[in-house]
Length: 99
Length: 99
DNA sequence: TAAACATATGAAATAGTATTCATATGTTAA
DNA sequence: TTAACATATGAATACTATTTCATATGTTTA
Image 1 (cartoon, rainbow over the protein chains, first blue to last red):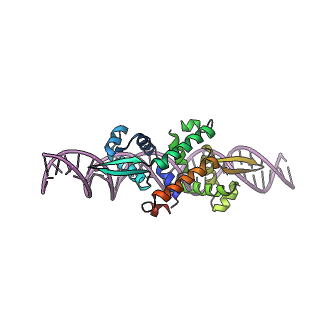
Image 2: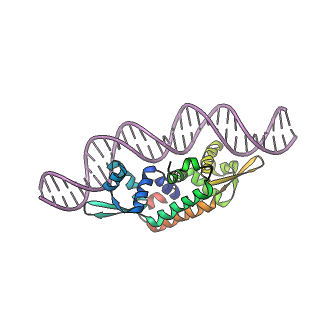
Image 3: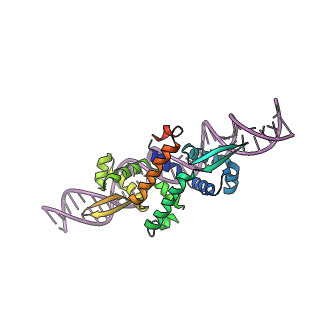
């Protein structure tokens, strides 16, 4: 299985993007994220598992909780590339999709 | 629709990764890509359309052909991030998936 | 301007991925 | 050592994206 496909496939999901957006701000445990996003816990756990499997998020035990953090070293520059890309290349064409 | 989801979703496909890999080397028209990858033309056209829609590939008419090129400014740094990510974070865990 | 070439497109069929729900596992505190 | 809490997991279903196939569009050349 191709690593790029693997990586992009993992991120190609609106819930995972929401998770990432939250974790940009601060580290959180599962129920905090669930509450913040208003979604069910097991759904989140599934999403977090695949993000973890690709080291897109990192996790650390904290008592009976598990504290999730974003792998900022990889993800922040990646999101910045997309921001620049949008600005430079998607003015008209993708605008309707990408807003 | 979220722009990151949009972008990653477009790339989360093994055929599109193959196309991108080819176009890293040189610009090509549809039938050349089709021949190179051994796949059917309309399948390629569909894939190229969505890549085009996000300006991941760019296209230029050349007589009756259409010459596709990779948007290297966006895509090359993005692939490099994944390469580094793999080296640093995926030694054991993702190794089985990502090889 | 008709034939040949190159590519694009729509819609149905199919494959791939996420969601849901029930339940299991692991941790702490009483 | 059990109850309560926090999270993970498996399997069925629902959803979304890709593939296929038939056909349409656009371009060049004879």
